[in-house]
Image (tube, rainbow over all chains, first blue to last red; front, side):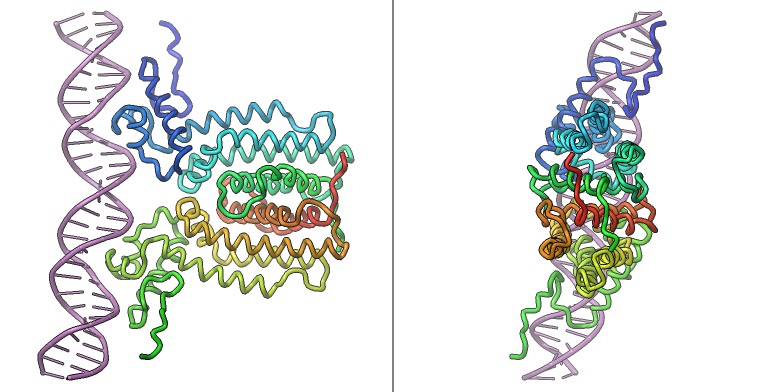
Length: 215
Length: 215
DNA sequence: GAACGAGTCAACACGGTGTCGAGAAACGGG
DNA sequence: CCCGTTTCTCGACACCGTGTTGACTCGTTC
């Protein structure tokens, strides 16, 4: 009896062995392709099925819903993002400015490489709890890591005291997130894509290392 | 021929004279009531109609869609917000800290008074262009006003030079907006509601009046 | 070659949106 | 008082998207 590994893959629906695996891939690829063209809300399950060369009921053999496809796509991006930000572990030797710049740039670049997916993520967040939770997890990881880095800077005397590092980290991350979204979506006023990282960095540095006037 | 005032009210659908006005109000009230209970996506046109004591087709006599109702509600809140922030016109005599605190507090309080509506706004923004544009307008007004105030502070020598005031204002406003949403929705990590204005203020002051380390 | 499981889809049930056309009710002339 | 016009109302419909059911194919395995 070879590996009967209880393969209930993280969020899949099948036991998945035979060739039907290609179909699953085809659905994912179709989703990514269509998202580059139109928003999530304009894509139907039928679009995904047809794009993958199957019928709608067959789609449901592979995924429980449209959102499940998105979640599957998102899992991959998140894994990639985790890897990237772990590489660029916060604050290497090169000094605060360079360290934070690298961190912010990495964050931005990872999501810029998946613009359409990021926008769909934001779109689905309002209506789907699972997607909301995934977002919260990613956000929290990032903010937590920043909070630790801020505390480290304070401990070594490089940054002055101030609000709880955790709160600061959450708000600055919120700013990044919103700026990212505004930049990608192009709706409403946003900082030019070429300048956004520079200005964000400036705000981060001032918030972490600067002091506010007493009054 | 008396006033044939081409009364196409801002976003309404009727010429609106007779008593059927109550119905319109009833729909708006129902919407606000239901939004306090469940998200926009969980409210159907039928719910609104029944809540107002009319049938679904009759609903369409008053509003073109569910989103039109939201837009109507939003127009009122926006008018209120405009009035409030005009009152608290940025930076009175009491010094920078007090001035910016008042501005941020006013912004927060206005929307806190309409939590459910604010969340619905965010929810509809992804799928409805009109609502997106309204949001962009409000955001832009606010950011513009902040940018002017920042430039004034720089001109009088109170604030050091830095990134374009406009960019700074846009990013700081993005932070406020996202923090506001996170606080209201309660999803994911957020700064405690009691502390959020204080920490936001600290970031604003440091971003505007502080300087970043050279490296 | 029977039994099994994976894969497939036509047809259905359902729930939401928006429209159409036939009326009822309100109101001012003539 | 009846008559036309305007406001208002809704039953019935057409449409679209979702998710399910049940039957059918096909390759594998014993």
